[in-house]
Length: 375
Image 1 (cartoon, helix red, strand yellow):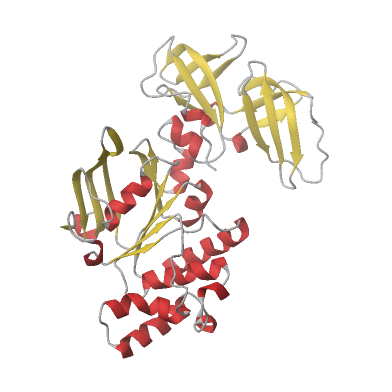
Image 2 (cartoon, helix red, strand yellow; image 1 turned 120 degrees about the vertical axis):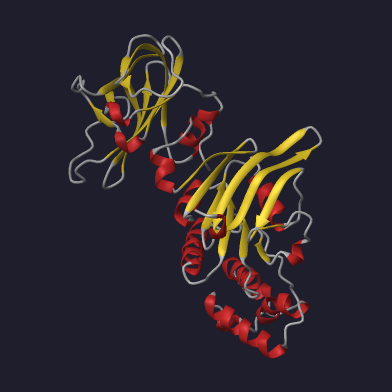
């Protein structure tokens, strides 16, 4: 992708607050018309990055370029960037129409054009019937759509959204996620969206930039992040995962043999970068790749003995939580015949098995990485 195809470019962007580094030298290119989400836990630097793009905060080092031009030092009102916050920040004394018209009024747009643009935007967010109401007469979802319309009405080249749906209940949040995604398909605007909710990021985004400790640790579409996580943090934060810790016993070109904690179980895994014989290694398996059986499975697959703590029939699959002998917890989403009874119940001894090629291995990892599942 050439620079001309990029709407936004971040180069070595850093933000320090005294000795604390909130954003640590990030590089990121966002294409025109792209929907990109900044995803990470609280305090990972994603909102600080968004505020530097908007102009509400300034980098300690590095450059922010919009349409190829640096905007460092350019005030927010001169960046042609729309912003939608978690709080709606609507004017309570104004009608929906007047709230949406406000950004155009302060820019001195002629009244005829204001009326046309407001009507177009009301149709876009499906609020024509509510134009004469005050914010207090609207639901939370309707108020957030007004805030979205107000950010879109002056046709910004970039639309920034800082956890705009986090205050809404789950059902309404999912409805608005669908609306935002559909809206993006109808407008020629680049959207950068901040959330700590990995399901929301997967539902909305063309690409996701995963933040951890002020750095971007991986960028990609949702499927790539889920199936090919670059490190243990991404593996933990994107989707549900089961983790096992072991020591590398043997290495060869095809893979490695790992002795799990406790010393009684050995499994096979693909060889990972940086691995050494005798070193600790972290293994990860996705729940849908594992199976639960009463009898030990074929020797060609990995298998760990355990005890079923929970077994929940969910129609097209059975969800198991299995405790291993060394105290690890394994999650299994076992796709079974939905007409068959669930034969394995709480307290039953079992084996959890999975294919060698479905094992992800990480030589460089921290215990904190595998304790953080996304909210």
